[in-house]
Structure formats: C-alpha cells, structure tokens
Length: 224
Image (cartoon, rainbow, N blue to C red; front, side, top):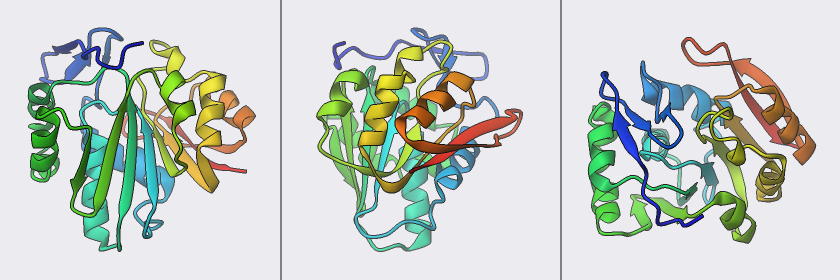
C-alpha cells in the first residue's frame, strides 16, 4: 500500500469527516475530544505516567485529534519533556481537511497551528513544544515491523474492526507488542472479541472497561 495515497473524506450532516474508503467517521459524533481523553489518555493511565522520554505510539493518525489531546494533557500536567509521539497512517488527510475537522474542537484548534503549518508544508516530523512528533506513512503491516522504537503507551485507533480488519489482525497486534516497552500499555475504543483475543495472543493482559458515551465497553491492557 502506498503511503502517499490521500484520504478520501466525505462530510456528514453534522459536519463530521467520514472516511469514504471505510464508511466510518473519524471521531465520535457527540464529542471526539472527550472520547479521546476517556479512551486513549485515561485508558493508558495518562497524564499520570508521563516522564522524560515517554513514548506514545498510535495506529491511525486521522485528524491528529489524539495527538493534540495528548499535547494539551502533557502541557497541563507540567511534566518534564521530551514526550515522543509516533503515529502510523496509510491514508493521510490534507491540511485543509484536518483544519476543517478540528474547527469542531476550539481547545485542540488553539494549539494546532504549528502542526497544521508543518503538515501543509509536507513535514511529517515536527515539534509541538516539548512534544516530538513523527507520522510514518504507509501500511502499518509494513512500516511498523521496520520501526526501531518501542512505545510506553499505544493508541489503537484504526477504523472499525468490521470495516478495517487489516489494522486489527493477529500479526499486526504481535508487531504492536514487539514494539512495546515492558509494562507498556494499550487502549482502544473497540471491545470486539477477535481484537481482544489477538492482543492476548500477542502478550497483553487485556481488560474490558466502560466505554465513552453510548459505547458500553472499550479495551485496555498491559504487556505481560
């Protein structure tokens, strides 16, 4: 899969971007920022675990909302840096589409300027204060095995497992585990049984937790 393939974005009646390729919205129809904080930050025990050199990794960059929420949490916590953030994305959105999507979240939009400027210029490595960001383009099944890093916390944020199963397969979940520090964690909005089983097979102790809003359950876990 070519990492330069752009996202195919449609906009629903509520102004939420929807992937035309996967027929799935990029964020929660109610409050995507609150869902990110509940699922990915709290699900990984953040910001309490932030420490110098802490590394967050993510499957599915999308609009960058998770990154910006992490940036806000890092700044509010006053934790010493640097904080590293690596995201894997196969179908990058254009800067204009991202800016339009983030307009729904003024708090995130207020710190998005340097990101949008860098993104619009084609940069995929940039800094947001003491947060160092790298977005790796291409199919994660190919790019993650070649990544030299290890994450302390993973955000597993691909599109729905029913519509984007390749981002939730057993081999890729094993690659996630291989690129997780000892006692590192993951969190994801999905509680799909096959995803949880794949993560368990990869070496994570998986728990089912209350989901955000109308979503009953989500999943989180620790590398054994």
